[in-house]
Length: 104
Image (cartoon, rainbow, N blue to C red; front, side, top):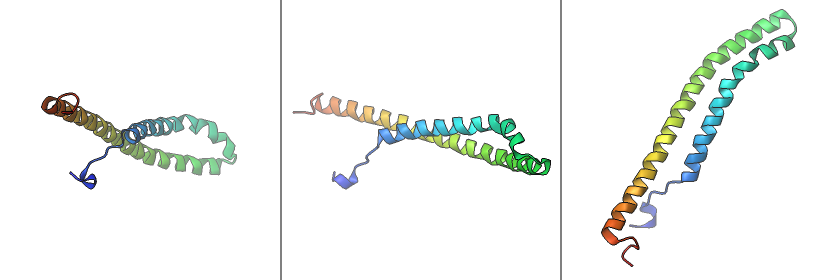
């Protein structure tokens, strides 16, 4: 099998992607806690009202974004586990066929 025909899986990238997606999810979930803190900084009630409208719209988009981040995180987790299992299965099959030292 030639070098260009091999599947190379970057486990470090998959694991860091999983961690990053968890961090993003945590940050997006935490944004709602700051809503009441920023209400007073807008001053005039009409500006505060418009900002409340904006934040409400943002909440809808944030919810959708959180769902997408969660779905992607699950896909990354499944991919990582599947490739790790496949690697182990291939290693075990090779050892069974060629011995632990690969037949050397």
